[in-house]
Image (cartoon, rainbow, N blue to C red; front, side):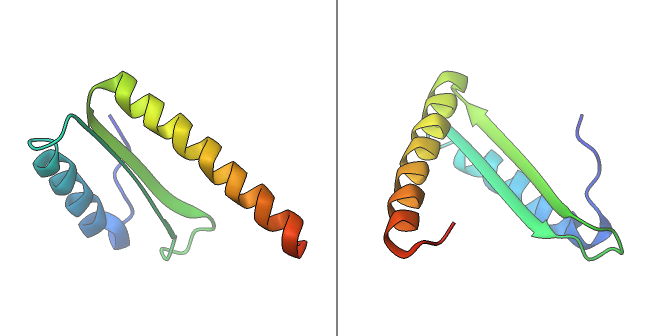
Length: 83
């Protein structure tokens, strides 16, 4: 069971949960990652992830996404020197 979200993110948590539950009725798999800088007096970032459906499909999509993003990031950092 996940920890309760901070008070300023409870609505976002509810919306993500509702979205994942509703969209999963129409697709084979769905995974959502969200984050936000905490505004409740604590340092850091609030984050959550939620998924439904075929675990292997979700895992494969995440791996593919990471590899594609790394490729884009490294090609851009080589062009303009940004890190």
